[in-house]
Length: 505
Image (cartoon, rainbow, N blue to C red; front, side, top):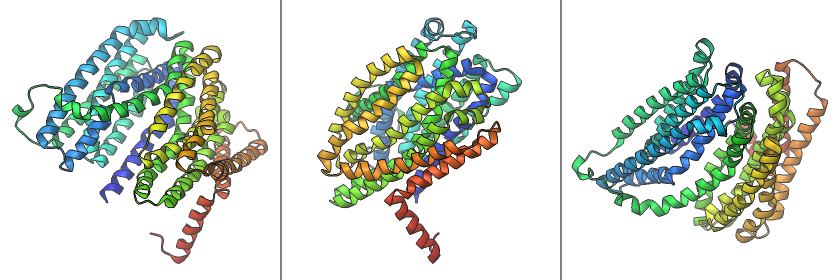
């Protein structure tokens, strides 16, 4: 019961935090303007890069907290570990924050291409960003401890409240007081301080009570046993950041800040596609690992293929719907045809790229189940070596559109060229069925229906009718993809039989 509640709470929290930022985005654009929103996109990108400084220690401390809960780590060893980590995080966070504070003038004058905003306003905004990022980064340590203690229901509720305060609470301020970057980020700093204080207080309530003299002497010794595990996680995190954030870093230097705001808007919307695959991956990974441990290879591959089909239906239909309806969606959503025209090509490319990525991630789940990530690490290393120069070149020569084509192209290359090698090692003979029956035919069904509706829909200047058209396109595209999926047809038939027998809960 506790596991189900924690999983449900985590999903609700994750989806809410992502969606509230997307839903309220038009209000930010309306009151702040594209250039100020470009600073918000720059801030989000900086947070991701700064998070690499934890070197995999936050997920590691969550694991150690869980081991302490299970009796594998003594109370005194756990408190010593937390004490050491607090010191390390404080030192690294303060050093990193100081560097950002000192670099604020350079960032405002030489890195960001600002046209309208006063230079001093941008400097103050970057300085406030530095303080917020440091607080949130150190707060990540306490979030991990609460996570490892399995207080996920509390943490999820807290994340929802904090996200509501950050995203929605600032809107009255923008409307009635002012929409300056300094005011926006000052409000975010206040929320960050409150978040940090609450996390620390709640975390210390969970700590085992021991004599403070037992861990008062600062030492790095408690960190040594966990460094190997944390370094493995750190490598994966670094690769993921390089893959997903290099284009944003390069473009923040190349694009005018207003255009970077349009780019950030499109990428944020496209990121919603990954929400459709996250719950599936979280559910199947432990299930597949269990089946492999039991020696049930046939059951493992069945789960693997069914999950692939489900994600192909959901993420694939969402990707093609966004691709065909990008400009109309942006116009209906924001009411600004300039924003729609600027961001639509970027949204199309990143939506398709994320749709491909959602499916291309599946061989990692297979390797995870087998307990062998060697090919995954090699593939990621090759991917990064190829992707970075391509993105830098494409973004430098063709801006956000070039970066979008590079993102889509590299994900397609990974899906077509690398993944067959993984299947050939772990499940010879799977490639033809997996590509043909589990992906391509489903994608064909979703694309054909979305294209047909895109061609027959009448043109309209009514934004509500546009939204209805997009919604219908998404539903029909999903339904069409599901028809071509044996897994979803099986789920539907099973549900129908249970409904007819009255056995549904």
